[in-house]
Length: 204
Image (cartoon, rainbow, N blue to C red; front, side, top):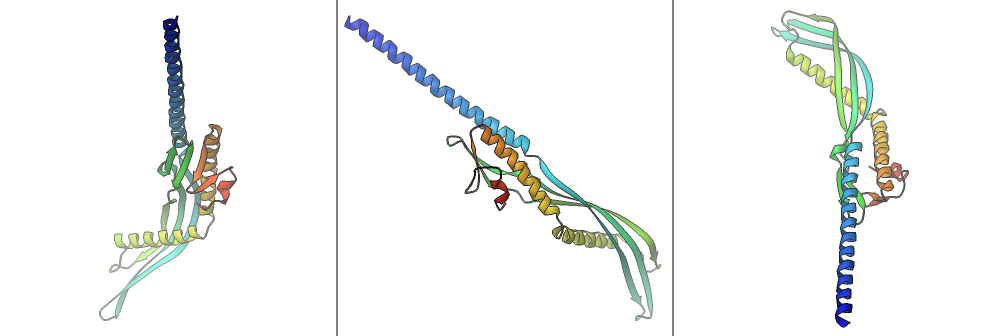
């Protein structure tokens, strides 16, 4: 009788041990699946956030050279019209993200700098040039550099960068909603995100 009870007890221990191991294994697999899914969804959301604008500029380029002790001079000038397509973007694939599997936390450690792209369409009108002072490649490069510098100053004083930031916050809100729906929490550096509105108050 004692042997039978001992055998039953051993079988029960083995069954309980197997059930415990199976439960833990299922929990681990579920956690790994959630982690992979979270990373994959963040990667899917992490597309370029782009704000675009168009800037126009008109200016006159003049240049003169003197010869023979300033007795003679050669001039060139042109009316230049610029229409530039400008974009401000965040490449969210470069997000520095840390995954805390056990704590079910997604921590954003760093957000990449915005990327400013300027594509100017430059047209020259009323071009005049003397034989001894003609337009060369160096002149066109100087003009393009001057144009891009002026456009960057305009961008800094425009709403393009702030609009791009608003789009960035919108994309991060998508990540927050996704993570929350899976029972995970989102943090930015040391700041926990308790709701999507918190993102708008964080200094990114």
